[in-house]
Length: 60
View (tube, rainbow, N blue to C red):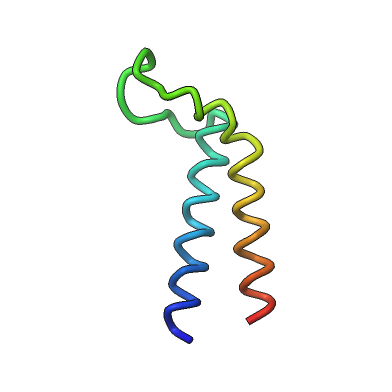
């Protein structure tokens, strides 16, 4: 029970961070030249992870 809430909180925070980096509100840590190519997908992956976390929280 508690583990599910912790998992949802971690997913929500990760989605919030991914969306913030993807939309440019936060800089990606490190040098701009060393950014992995997956960072450009954070614009859709972050909100998707947020939605999944909210749906799982509502279902439990």
